[in-house]
Image 1 (cartoon, helix red, strand yellow):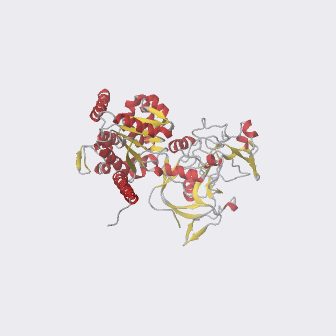
Image 2 (cartoon, rainbow, N blue to C red):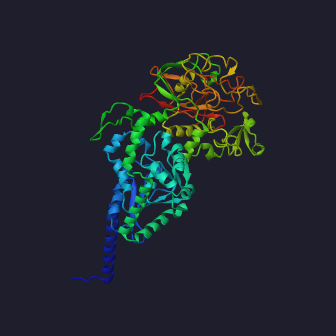
Image 3 (cartoon, helix red, strand yellow):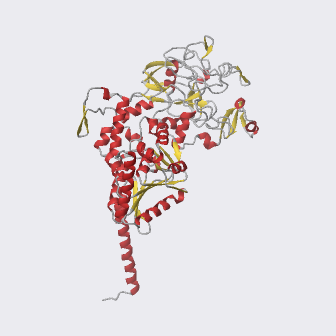
Amino acid sequence: MAQVEPAMLYNSEIIEKLFSLLWISFTKFSFLDTQYEYILADKVGSEKTVGLVTLNRPKALNALCDGLISELAAAIGKLDKDESVGAIVITGSEKAFAAGADIKEMLNKSYAENVKHGLLQEWDNVAKCKKPIIAAVNGYALGGGCELAMMCDIIYAGEKAKFGQPEIIIGTIPGAGGTQRIARSCGKSFAMEVCLTGNQFSAQEAFSRGLVSKIFPPEKLLDEAIKLGERISQHSRIIVQLCKESVNNGMLLFYSIVTSTLTHLILLQLRRVHCDCGCFFRPPVRQTLGSTQKNGVCFNVDFRTIVEQRVTANMVLIEGGTFPIGTDKPIIAPDGEAPERQIRVDSFFMDQFEVSNADFARFVQQTGYQTDADKFGDSFVLYSLIKDAKTKEQNVSAVAAVPWWLSIPGASWRHPEGPESTILDRWNHPVLHVSWFDALTYCHWVGKRLPTEAEWEVACRGSLEDKLFPWGNKLLVKGEHKANIWQGLFPFNNTAEDGFEGTAPVDAFAQNKFHLYNIIGNVWEWTDDWWTTKHFKKNGKWVTPETGTDKVKKGGSYMCHKDYCYRYRCAARSQNTPDTTAGNLGFRCARTASASKISGL
């Protein structure tokens, strides 16, 4: 028999050890990771005594979908039963711990369906974990994300963490115990303010209120949370469990409330029915809730109904039909105002008001969105509106053909006339310096969309045909102004006879029978359509271009004057590239009322 060289034996031992390590790693990875789609799970720390669960939907800011909640509950359950684990850490990404529930998914489920699928019990299982859970919160912890953090026993936060319960913005209340837990931690007054406004609050304020235990730089947060978990794990498991139970029972006794998440959600449903449809004032009914009969309680209002009501608040339903758009009597023919075209439009909702600074600020606050003007670093401002001498003296460039437009560094929706200006006294004025892309993103965020040009013009006309303005053919009605446009000699002197030199509040001028405000004047409004001046038919129907370089804008603005820009008419139109931003450019939203699409006849 051939002798085996020591070196060969040594190599085979290495191979065997490597294989063993690989197998251990594989089985560990298989047990903790590969079965999960939305989370990562592991045991960490010098002695692997800390369970670590990382929410892992970065593109969705760790939105809490059904799958994530199920996987989180399963992982917490396994770690709770693992005798080697003494504490558990839940974390997300640096940008978001969890930005709330997955709204798209919730829209397609009723309360009864949630009960049937057991999601409420899975939430409850997280709260009932016997081992201490530490939340390591970086970035956004909003809605369900904030509630998840508060289900944990200790919250460590990064310096830039943001907390909040914005559910009221979409027409509901925190449904996973948030209203109770935040009141317990921060007091009734602060809890009321947070829940009734949807406002976010910083890690520093959360710390001052007692919600957060400690604050760390974002890059050190997770390490500190794991260190805390290791320290807890050094103590007797049973004593730690009893200590956690005793503290929680003390809180329950003090506040005399029930902490079951399932109970909170049932109470949420009952309160919602009581305030929204008045079912308690009707005879008892019998409804099937999953496989359980519930007598005397009507569960006939689901989340989709509430969201729909919330989204369409301050919107007007415009019934579909065939309508004329354009005109056979064009005033600015090169813009493609002609010919008049009969267009079939399905029923749709239209915002009564242009999107305001307050609306857009809420969007930016919730999402951290940066507009194109923010990214470019400048935007166009009307020279006469710049009151700050320092801004005027900056090295700004004017547009050659229209020298009253200046490109102002730092001009944006927050600073409409440059860095020294503010919107603090203009919250109810239309948001400015928003590109078509910005407008589209906002619309999607609120569950709406931009109107098509046809929809916009139908809404503008208010059932009147062949009229210049939404109210008729005369600009003034009994001597009163009906729109915010330019009076005086453009661009040198605006006499502001309508009461406004620049923008007006979004509710300043009611203009037609649809009760739409500022549909002409005030600011130009983006539409969804690509620009063309050559209207054409396809298969006998008027169609719009599928692509292009510019987007259609409608309505004119406070800068429009009959002698220069007579485009504050229903049939008037203009265009800009989708990335254009300016101090007279805004938008309003629309929403489809049926599944059918707009079609031309």
